[in-house]
Image (cartoon, rainbow, N blue to C red; front, side, top):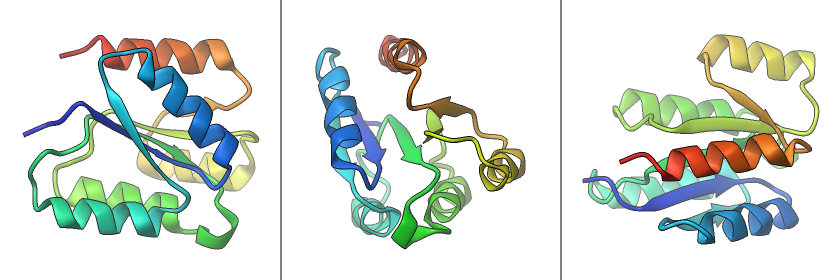
Length: 126
């Protein structure tokens, strides 16, 4: 079963709060994590029930370097990869390589119009 929950993973609390506020304007709820380890732990506890509807994951978390790709792989291996977006403030060469390896769309954090459009579009899907 898929819930009305959207997961946000970012080490910056202001980004987590901003995304949560945007999502609160929709019929969806959000849950945020400062790193992917905590997110994966949470997802493991779900045992395949009430799966989140979508994910916004920072590509660069200093204490969690491989975490964004590990979260992607965790979800993909379990057939839970849906409405998954990477986000970044800087599309560095390592971020481009991650995008190319996973095929996941990357949203720029400084493009608020794009972020709002994606959140609004995602939340209007059923």
